[in-house]
Amino acid sequence: MLEFNTAEVRDRNSHVMEAPSQAKPPAAPSPECLREMYEVMVRSRRLDERCWLLHRQGRIGFHISGIGHEAAQVGVAFAMRRGYDFLHPYYRDLAMVIALGMSMRDVLLGSFGKQGDPSSGGRQMPNHYCYKPANILSVSSPVGTQLPQAAGVALAEKLKGGDRVTVTCIGEGATSEGDFHEALDWAGVHKLPLVVVVENNEYAISVPMRLQMAIERVADRAAAYGIRGVSVDGLDVFASYAAAKEAIERARAGEGATLLEVRVVRITPHSSDDNDNTYRSPEEKARVRMQDPLPRFQQQLLEMGALTPAMIAEIEQRAQAEVDDALRYAESAPYPPVAWAMGPVFAE
Ligand SMILES: Cc1ncc(C[n+]2csc(CCOP(=O)(O)OP(=O)(O)O)c2C)c(N)n1
Ligand SMILES: [Mg+2]
Image (cartoon, rainbow, N blue to C red):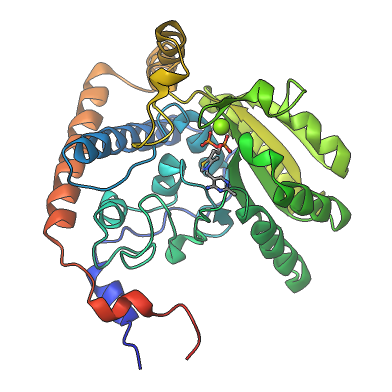
């Protein structure tokens, strides 16, 4: 009999934050909400950057980054009823899972493969987020496999008569997979309460979008399945929030699924194990860095008066302190007992 003590996992996670508000999101975010969105973006960015350093220092084995995707992720996450709706994320969704209530400690426990990692008890690859208290379903490693799973969750919710919406995220490369076709076809046929967010960063590792599809907008693919297709600037929090909110509320009202393309940039290489100098020119990389959504959102909030330089400094300080705390916590946490490697995967 294998002992996988889930109570112990929970105990080790007693630091876990309260689930964020499950309330219906407002039509337009208030200044407090905008500050919260900004803080999530900063926290995600600082943690992400630290993970790159930890990888280069040989302290963690892998990292895959959401840098450049945060505005879209925060826009979508805040348009959800967080902790009530379902999220089937993919590996780049760091800002999104933080917005839904995963802590930096949770994330780093996964990066270090330590006991207490809520995603998998330290057995999955890093960045394979899963967090039951916030209805975050586990990331699937094979690209696109979360799509039929998410359609299944949406179908189950519809059959139960519930009003929870399922949001799932993929890259534009994943839209070439058969799973994409199967899931969107079902979403159309059964009018599922599903929002498929395509975080289009124009690359699938080294393969540019023009070698992936002969159309300009991923959202155009929606027409083939009889669902809505919407394409927005995913570097803009406001545009991402508005588009996601409309898609989610339509899904909740029984009006069916949306394919929501958020056009973002991948500022880093594909992962810690990729060298993008082999396929991106220095000019292209500089151009991409100039589109960083974080300073853009900061500037927007400064101009609106929702942020002040003093607030920005405070948020930075809190984020850095949280990263330092999470790192100390995760690095000193124990590894899971060897017996846990085998369970609970298969039924006894
Ligand atoms: C079925 C499958 N094929 C290939 C891979 C290797 N792989 C991992 S990520 C990735 C690129 C995916 O690109 P995209 O969907 O655009 O997402 P992005 O990484 O750009 O966010 C590939 C080919 C995989 N994990 N699964
Ligand atoms: Mg991509």
